[in-house]
Length: 360
Ligand code: SF4
Ligand code: SF4
Image 1 (cartoon, rainbow, N blue to C red):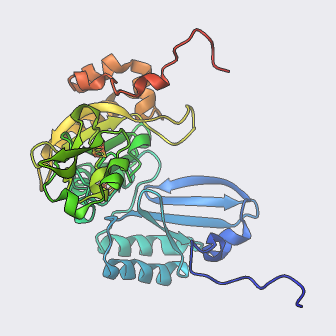
Image 2: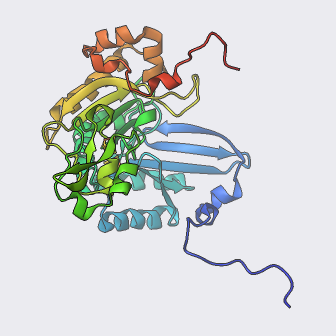
Image 3: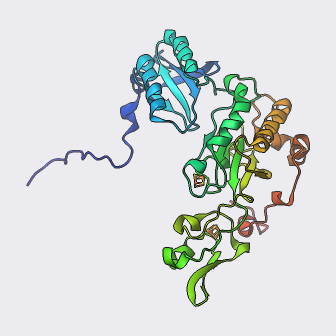
């Protein structure tokens, strides 16, 4: 019989402990940082209680990276940062340095490779986005293509910090929302506007009970057509989420004419000055118009410019709207108010307060 604790089992399942990848200066000062400052667009300094300083150089990335690009970025990290580099939750890349003399040469090399340096403080950070037509089957719109077109137009706000406050942009190519569209200052959300089609091959390629169970709103029910088992979709119950298509390829939801983008505004994760907030609908539908999506680019740019010209210092888009009110938001931006802005989702009543009692 053996005694004592079993040795730690090594496995490749699950993420490795992040502490194994921290730069030595962060490990040494973990939890003991005093303050940080933005030295200039794209450059931060964090100062520890011990007096140690950590410099960060932030650059934008295209989010979907080739192996060659990753190797180039890693070569830079090896050359300047002892091999330490990190990605932020919005796909910026951050090079972490302790020697301030290396900041300018590093910035010069990053720029020479075509990456913009910036995205800090009162600027637009990289747009967090999802897979789009490159990868995902449910996509109602593209991701990388729109993001490239939008950022080409707004790049000055990435490399400068002249906005009233920071803006976080997000894109998700369907309402399943692998991006952070629910909590971003401006969010582009791909939407389907028609229920899936039921193809004749469905009984041959899909398990009907699984298909019925896949629908979160119970919009799918079994049906017999010409004596064969299949399903039908109740249009009024369908919210065009595409979950059933994930389970069954015989329920295609993509539709060139009726798929497109909506724009949402006013969300944020931060609890600085005001509580975190969900994004709310601003533009219900814009068409997919590749390769440059001019309607979506114009809509985003318009909101940024109107907000930048009207907001108070440090007032994020949601806080600005809270101050001026939604009627003024629609008036100032020139966005028409439509019936889609009224929340009539069939489960909405479950969230309404329907009594005179105050909630504790
Ligand atoms: Fe796929 Fe939707 Fe995620 Fe886009 S947001 S990657 S379409 S599940
Ligand atoms: Fe149900 Fe979504 Fe399929 Fe509509 S798209 S039938 S809501 S699973």
